Image (cartoon, rainbow, N blue to C red; front, side):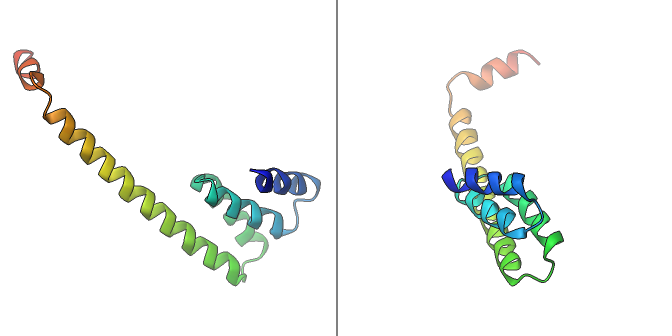
Length: 97
């Protein structure tokens, strides 16, 4: 969290260098704030379109997003399986139709 705060302070002082956005994006990725990290990496890409580091970070971010989506799908499946095993749930739904 300290890195995020310091990078934000640096960006507030001078938003032109891409390094503040890049480091803050990496901190956000570590914190699991992937949407915010994407925004910062988009800014970095605009400021420094030829950066290999940015391309690698975007690839890493996409991997993290894919992993998060997998976890979400597993959680939804687990919840749906649990709910479908609740006694009496189907009878309540059936009586309302």
